[in-house]
Length: 256
Picture 1: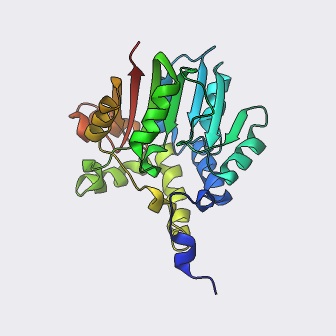
Picture 2: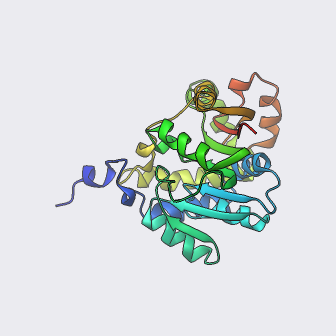
């Protein structure tokens, strides 16, 4: 008989942990608008990519890989999950998508990319030094790395601020979509909790230190709500950086 532990346990080298349901649900988060705040911040951080060579590491279902392609980038997406690549290829058959680990970038030549994106991926990988060494090698001088991840230790994660944040979510379409998705996912977590794969979350401060220790220069760092509520977020943007949200996007540069 199948036990609950057999389907909820996470091993970092088990690429099949992320099943097809995971990628379908993530795609729905994007197209429902629940992740609109995150999408806007990431695309603003990436900037103009027309004619640039880009690598989307941990591309999952291919949503951002496709966004980069639509903005004129020559983009490749990689993910170690066979289900992720299968789903991405079915959604975006014209993209260059490959099943490949973020820790195995040896197939790419030195200094071959202008931009590397690492979107909601770094928190799933324990060996950050290996990961960033590989990315640094394949970036051209002056090339940029864009990272999107949780802001671990955010005050938003603790009462009373966490309660205030949740209570205001119904005041935006993003928030309402996110709350509806959460109702479904609370039930799903009884059988399989994908969040257990967040094995290496980083605070805003620790991510900056990690990147600088790996030889990168920090260009920009934004901390913001994963779920946007415009009238609330205007106020939060006036607060000290640590209080502005529970997600972060960092732009780092390889020295020219």
